[in-house]
Length: 281
Image (cartoon, rainbow, N blue to C red):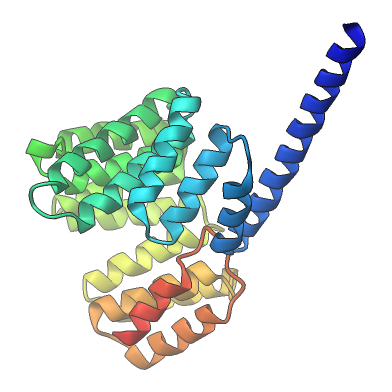
């Protein structure tokens, strides 16, 4: 009996080790934007835990299959109800479903988006991604769907407690939403001062300046960001998107997007399909 038990335990340990290796391989494929390859490995796993379902959901999300993304991410959160990251990604998937849904189903999906963002923050009050996504929801959603500037202000304060630069950026977004443009610019600049080597802080400021029609200052700020990270895919994409959104420098935007398409991307970068859509515009 004891020998059989030891053999069963050894088999279980070997199976768990193999599953862990497969999950690592699938995660590496996901990180290199091979979402089909990652999904093939994950689907073939005979037993899936929360981490496997979460990665399945993120792969579907990156492929814009948001229905299957929500289904997989719900299984992930059911397997590990205390995981803030799983709740965040589930909220994001429901948010994308809300964007594409009709007028009768969109409100329900939007409410789920808010609920899962709030749950992610409740589970981990220092999860900056969750706090920022929740802030964006409060800023953009109407009151009957749980949005509101008072809630946004409270969330911006919580962000500031975790990270000073992110806090200034959050205050800037809130001030701009309230059309307090002087205060918004001051906060964007404080964010840059708090994190002078973060490209995203300079990009935020440049995009704000271009929205205000201050193109020359925006270009100077983009130039500073380019000095910090000349080959940053994030900078290439967001700079091009800013030009296209504002109807300026379209030839340069095309060049930037072509460079982006030829860059080595990760799952944290916008997919090439999004860049192709911008190029078509």
